[in-house]
Amino acid sequence: MTDDLKFPRVFNPNVQEGASAQQREWLDILDRELHRLWGLGRNLILVWAARGAGMDILVIPHYSISDFDRKSKEEAEAAGSSALGLRPVNFMEEVIANPKQVTQGGLAHLAQMTGYDPIPVELPFVPGTDLAPELIETVVQRYSISYVEDRAVALFDIVGFSLFSPLEQVTQLNSLSYSVNSAYAKMLSRDLDISFARTTTGDGYYIWNRDRSVQANVNLYHFMHLVLADNAIARAKSSPNTTPLLRACFHMGGHYEFYQSEGLNPAVYSYIVGDVTIELARMIDRAMPGQILVGEFDAPMPDRNTRQVERIDSVEFIERTQGTLSKFEGLELSGDDVEDIKCYLTGAAQGDDAGGEEQYAIKRYTITDKHGRSRNVYNAKVNIYRSDADPIFLGVQTTDLDGFKYDKDEFI
Image 1 (cartoon, rainbow, N blue to C red):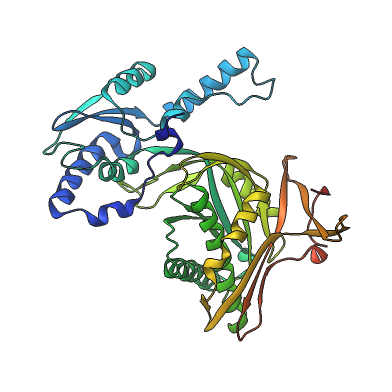
Image 2 (image 1 turned 90 degrees about the vertical axis):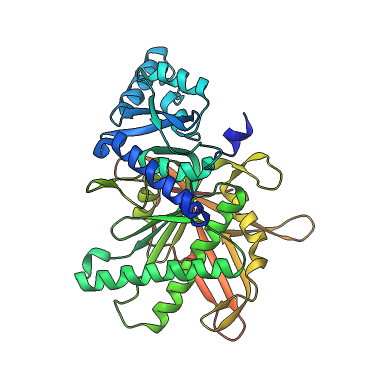
């Protein structure tokens, strides 16, 4: 696997903030050209290649994505790989999982594979020289689809949202939105940058980090517990029905990221849909009010420092998260400094080992959704201890899980 595949270019709309006036003018021209090819949402930009003062762009109808997916499944069934439980390799999925910029040779190969000819576009600048590929990608992405195989996503859900009046619903969504923004400001104050994006679920948010690495995923988990902490403090001070009671889930998996059509233009904000959002939705359906669930995963995560990719499971991930919590010591929450934070997956003591040290085992739960599909989850806790105030306990203790509906549990 090449470094480009290990560390694919990450779309970050904030890249444009440092562009010059001339570069912004060129980006506007490129945007108009791509908008014309986009055809009000009928087409999408698959890839592009630089060509002098211009670009060659491979444009395909959006429905062809599902056609390629169906074809790959049919081929897998014909080969018998589906019966063996093997996931079919989708050529289109691999293409959209990688950067949109390709070489001229790569463009020709993809044109042959898809059956569509590249479209030449003349521009008043030289891509890659006058405009960096990262800047060009910020425009191309709005007219395209991306696929990420393994990304951490957090889901916040307002308990009993449908039972509130419309005005109370607006108030609670605004309160949650403020907690998200407050948590983001606190992350920045500790030099923990997180390029987060969010999609509304109607009664909450999916939130993910645009960056992809072990550190980015850990930062997202920290971000989640800071959102929950701000919400808990607000609930303690607010009147009934103004601040939401939350439940939250954290998981890692694949998803597509895209921009829906809004009127005659693609939306400014992206949306995600895929395995990870489906799993989170089914997990949150079983979560108790105030509970935090972590899905079971074993995912490849690149490390920024070592430039290596290693597989990390849920238990090791939470251990790594706990190991970085010293960065939050001294952080101010509601006027009081944080002295210590503990985050862990719950379980029970299992007696002492030969050396007299207490052994602790984590409990794993199997839950089944209304469609009869099962998955494993962990119950998570976060305890925040402050200097001159009561501690903040987030999540639900094992002893208080009487209302948690699961099929079986086991210690690991």
